[in-house]
Length: 514
Image (cartoon, rainbow, N blue to C red; front, side, top):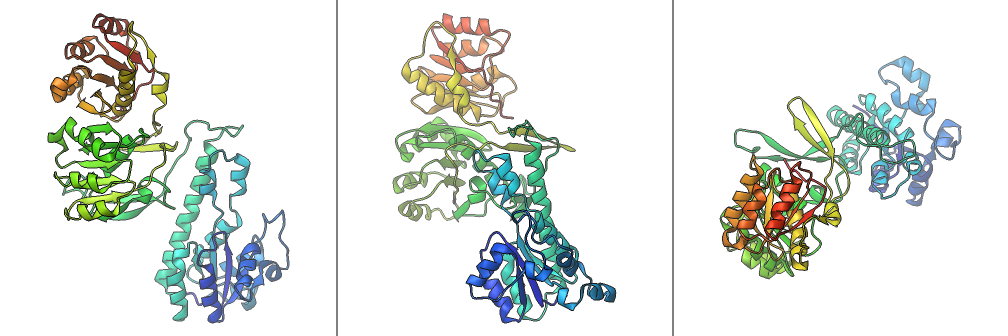
């Protein structure tokens, strides 16, 4: 049970440090601090002893060496129940509390264009060593590595001493931080070539997450489930999710929200997508959210019942009024206007959530678990392939067809493979997905579209292995197709489109989603 008489403070993030330090000083705790931390505390009117004065050695190597000194680490690691340790260090050398947070390596490497040299300068050495030393000796030394820990720590100190349970918890969190910190560094350096450019997938990779919320159950009531988030949070996506109303989010809700946001990232104009069981029921781009919702809902109103609706624009009152007209599980958007929030409250169980996302999905890696293993891949980023599409048929698409083809191509990218999307007027009219054969998905999309297939366009997430799918589309009145190409029967497929007077674009890029 550590009793605090001397504290060492060395913090890059000064949040809440003044309150903690003043509380410690009020209890008669001597404050040691390094460089910028000492200056900060002195500006708060506190008496602070510098690390250099304590060790008798000044900072070296432009500040790279400050706390890496035997007197510092001896004062932290000495066991108070071992007289030889105490005699070796001396009572005036003991350090009972270490408050450290680390250089911001993780946020540095997320900055666009950051150099390897700049990233390396944000690798903390002394701070990590201090945390590990204090955490190892938690029976005698308390440690804090995050501002959120300051209040309970100070409260315990003001009661006389830090309880063993709290000291152990703080030590555990410190080791978790240093482990995660080293993982960030290894992952970053492992993904760099000698010239500092990205070098494919890392040879060793890991991820650290913490439980954000327990869930009632997993996919089914007999399965336990919980929602985890990366340590340190994320400035976009689920790291920013806020629930405004409704029942507790479920495991399946979270999967569907993720599917919705992935689709919406593709579109700059106002868009609405409806997701059910991780599959698209409808998607549209329009001048305003209300219009986009009406078009998306019309694609497959039967399947949309009990689904989730996502927008890439704030939900306004007019749209909210329309949303309350059917049973929905979740609404997700960047924000909800006050008038809309009042209308949505009429549906007490309706989950309404907001989250932030950028204008496009950031580059990164995605994990998926296998039985006894993992697969890791680069994220399939929005939009790029459609810009490389080339016309392979005799007929060029009209401008309206081309716009709808680009819209449908992005939608097909997020349909479950095999995916076929029929679209007209920047809205889906039929979606076939998740079928073992591509022609089966064509049939399903045409069945969903009915008469709306006439004059629509089609997108396929993978190539057509045979001409039969294009033949069915042509008979239904579909006028243009976009697909990756790459089949050994591409010539037959293109000839089929030419015979029907269809336009066909080939992107050269496949977008399976399993």
